[in-house]
Structures are given as C-alpha cells and as structure tokens.
Length: 323
Image (cartoon, rainbow, N blue to C red; front, side, top):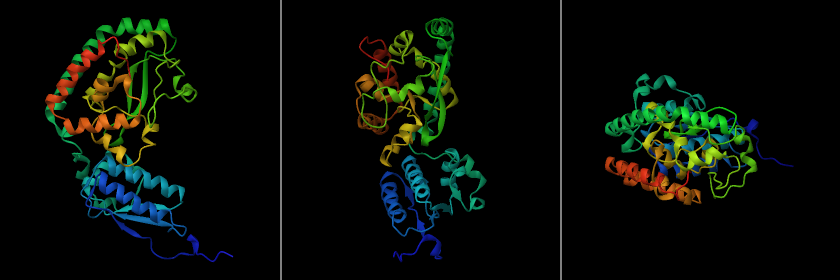
C-alpha cells in the first residue's frame, strides 16, 4: 500500500521560489533546472509561486525558461504563479503577451508606466540610427516592390491558382509573434503537406532543397529573393529589421532549450549572417544558432551595412539559393 501523501493531502503553503536579479542565459538555465527539479518530484506541490521581487532584467533566455517551466507545470498539473513582478519585467511579459498566459497575482503593484518600458536585450534594439536605416530601406524596398508587383502577381496567378501573397506566423524579438509576408512560391496547401516532406537538415528548423511544394515560378523568385520583397512591410512596421537573425516559426521555437532563446534577443532580419555566409549551405540548427549569436556579438551599424551590401552580391550569385 502506498502511504505517500497525495497533493490533496498536502495543506502546506506553496513553495516561494526567488528569481535572480537578472534572468539571462546563465541564470535562466540554472533557474529552470532548479524549478524543474521541484516540479518533477514524486510528491510535487500542487502549486509553486515565483517571487520576482528582485528581478530587474529579463531577456529572451529568461522568457524561454518561464515558458518551458509553464509547460512542465501544466503537464504536472501544478498551478504556476508569479508575484511581485517589477515594471521592467512586466513590460517584457506584456510585450510578449505572456501576462495573459501566466497567473500574475499582483498586477496592481506593476506600474502602468511599464507599458512604455523597452527592455534593452541587445544594443541594436534601442539604436535610433538602425531604426532610421530600416525605415528608409523599407520605403525604398516597397517602392521597388510596387514597380515589380504587377508582373510578379500575374506570373504567380498564371503559374499556380491561389493568393498572390503568402503569410506565415513567425517569432520575432523576445518571441513576439507576427505575420511574415512573402510573394507565394509554393502550392496553396504547402503547410498541410510539410509533414510529408523529408527534412534535410537537423535540429529545430526545416529545409528541403528539392521541396516538391515549390512551384515552377517559385523556384525562380526564391532563387532571386524576389519572394521576400513584401517583407519590407514587416520592416516598416518594426516587426523585422533589414539585418538581423533568421525569423523562426512557432513550431521551431517549441523545440528550443533555454540557450537557443538567445537568438531572439534581437529583431529578425530580411538578411543576416545566415544569408551571407550560410544561405543553402546551412545544414544544422546548431549552425544557425552560431551564426545568429555571432551576429549579435559583431553587431554595429557598419557591420549591418556590410551585410546588406554582401547580400546583394549573394542574390546575384547564380550558385546561391533561398533559405
């Protein structure tokens, strides 16, 4: 007979777990392991409370740790709550809409001014000059898009029935979701067929060099990157940047461990190191992560301009191909 106490028999107050002053990758990994151990115990508590009273900064890795812990708590049927959330942290949770997912007990203690706080997860995020370059580049790009729109739209309609644009949910800065816009280069039921297509790369992203879902015209506009022209609208809206990291899909982010969330500390870009140095040659998720983190270390306005120029040469290289 099992005499161990059940959750219903336990009347002890839920454990109060103090979060560190900063939840960046090193602290986030340790914190996730600590809380996961508590949640995974045979006699795990019916609820846990995370005390954010000391936490002044959280980046994408911290968000990743909280998301992973929240999923684990749901699996274990443990109530997951946050208390004493400071305005700086509340701003990040609000931006990522996690304040609508997590049970945040003391919202009244979080100043309404938190909505105006912008966490500086990376210097590029608060760079006014980078944003000005994005806006100017987006306006120029949208002008070019307007010029080529009619012939591309007609060619898409003639080549394959269906909409002109393809919209897909992607994860941007801090994991915020947005709809990326492209000229359609695949058949209309491409998403439902994805599970039937072999993945030629390893890790949390998908690629198939001879993807049968790509239309005849699609091969051309992907080869020349014409399919990506509508993304200038995403840049103008501030969802993306001209230069940044590769924007992952939500199902890719679902597979992330805490360290991988670091790549979401900057805005995703229309181009980046994966385009210039990787492009079709990238064959593993680890390579993508390394390129994205390397970009964050090297970032400067000068380096962004260099990558933009190099991207133009890559596009016109007959041996290049779309990611």
